[in-house]
Each structure stands twice: as C-alpha cells, then as structure tokens.
Image 1 (tube, rainbow, N blue to C red):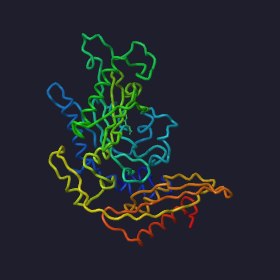
Image 2 (image 1 turned 135 degrees about the vertical axis):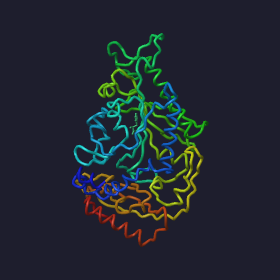
Image 3 (image 1 turned 180 degrees about the vertical axis):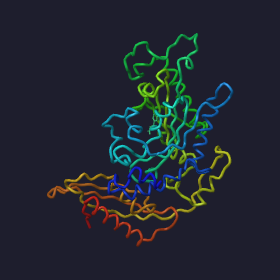
Image 4 (image 1 turned 45 degrees about the vertical axis):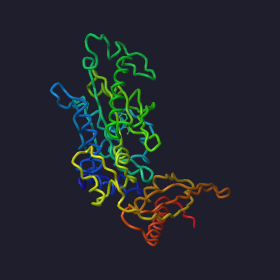
Length: 406
Ligand code: PHE
C-alpha cells in the first residue's frame, strides 16, 4: 500500500478536500472484505461463485467459469472507461465522482474495468470480484468503498447453434443497429443469448433471495452492452435494482481478440445483496471488526440462513450547519461530504441538504445541511459531537471558502 503511494504519487494528485479521506480509503484497501473467510461479503461471493460453478460445467463436469478476486484496484482510466466505450463526456468520468490518482490512474469505479484485459488473455467465461471506489453522498446505504461481482460469458457460432439449425450469430454484412440489437448480430443470436442471460440471472436471484422472490426486467443503458437491462427484485414491498447486464458491445469483444464470439455480461453490488439477505441495516457495519458482528457469520456453508441481530442501538444526535457558498467558486456538495466524513469518520450516519435559498440583495446562495451523528459502537456525548461539528465548519471555511452562518 505504501509502495503504491509512491509509485502513483497519490498525495500530489488528490484535491485538498479529500486527501485525508483518500488516505483512510487507502488504509482500508488491503482489508479485502470479499476475501475474508466468513465475512458477509465473502459469503455472498461464495454463493454466487458456487451457483456459477454448478450451472455451467464442461464435458467432464468441471466448472467452466474461472474466478478473479485479487486484481489490483488501481487501474488506468483507459481500463475503467475507454476500453469499455464510455463516451469522453460521460458523467461518470467527472472528478467529483471517481477517485483519480493522477491523469492516468484511478481507483476502479467498477469491476467491469478488467473485462477487456481478461478477454484479451484468452478467457471466455469468468467472474471478477473486487472492491470498487466511488465518491458519493454519505448515508447508511452509501460508502466510498464497496464490492462488485462482474461476469462475462462468450460463445462461438458453433457453441450457440447446433449445425443442423442453420442459424447464424453474425450478419454477413453489418446490418442496422436497432433498439433490439447491434449491427453485427443476428436477431436469432440476440434472442437466444438474452434468454440465457435472463434465465441465468433470474435463477441467481432465486438462489440468493429464495425461490419465491418477485422480480422484473427494466430496459437500461450501459456504454458497454446493447441491448441492456436491469433486474429488479421486490424487497419489503419496494422494487430494488439488483444488477445491470446486457449483450456485450461487439467492438469491445473484437478489440480484445474474440471477434468470432458473442457474449453477455452483468455486474452486481455485493453490499446491496448482503444487506437484504442478512438484514444488515447499515453499510458501515461491513467494516466493523467487532467480534459480536463477525461471529454471527461464522458458518461453514455460505447458504446457511443468517439474520443479523443488532448488538445494541445508540442514540442519534442531529446538528445543522448553514453557510453561504462562495459566489464565484465551483462548490461541489461531494467536497463538503468528504470533509464531513474526514472529520467525523464513523460518527457520521447521514448528511443531507435540508434547505437552500438565494439572498435577494446579496445574490449569495445559502445551503443548510443536516448532519446526523451516531456511532455504531457507543453513545456519543454532546460535547464530543459539538467539537466535531465546529471542526467541520472550520474546515469547510478554510478549504471550500464558504462562510458559516451563525
Ligand atoms: N459496471 C456496471 C455498474 O457498475 C454494471 C454492468 C456490468 C452492466 C456489466 C452491464 C454489464 O453499474
């Protein structure tokens, strides 16, 4: 980790506002929750891997999928974006959304970043599991590090269609691209492949959430698949987006040297699944080293039913902060969220913008944020919360140039 610091010169490349946060993240990078035996993130990973190992077997009953769960989270912007055809001006490339180490390197924002390299290395069926990094709002379901599982399955003409069916995967000459398919692919190929993809993922949802889980398919857009869908499941009466997927863009597959194949891919967030499967109410709990938390997941079989029991619940403490944002600056809410998290650490449960107005004469904009303080492991004192709250104000003034209103 320290080696990486030097190699990629992290400190010089990080904006002032999130330097400490980034250091905190870098400290957590080696934890690799998905590799920690009996950690809930690892258990969900094991469930998914076991499903794929059983579902897709070769001639001799051996699994055809291979698993990559130890790839370096430091990737190039090329791997994270360009190789996946993410447009130059796509929102996800913004500095306020990802952690850039310098102009060339970043912390991967999705495990899809490794897709094209693994295809280039000759693989047709693989799972990628790893920690991913995104700048985001602060609340009980968002954390700047989380975990994803991606999958790719590529098939040839010969594997997809038996000789006697007389069906083709590719158009002889590229056809028109429509809402339903890419120019290179035939309607037949896309139809059979999307059927395979959807049934595979519906069964995965049943494997994770039980045979009675309610699900639905929603049209979606990703730069690296077409057509694309999202699978939603009903959880406690609400529709929840579980994963994104689609038919892989032929240009990506061809560039990676597998132009004779058609493939599907998907990506899913492990915390999302783990929170529903185990009833874990707060995403920060995954980083707990508390025995009382971890012991609940000490099971031999990853399919063992476990329901998380909160060890104890401590009271919240709510404090508002209002300030004028600098008139000519480029104030970004995420910079403020970073400061809150940096100063408050694990005392912060939630930050939200509760009021915003423009002063008619001064032409200044005021923001009011409500910060909810709560520690997962102890009761916070009023004095301790006030000290942190004041420090957040001081830091926002110094770094973001806001002026705090009393
Ligand atoms: N990478 C996408 C995300 O993070 C998920 C995805 C992966 C969608 C592969 C389609 C194919 O949301």
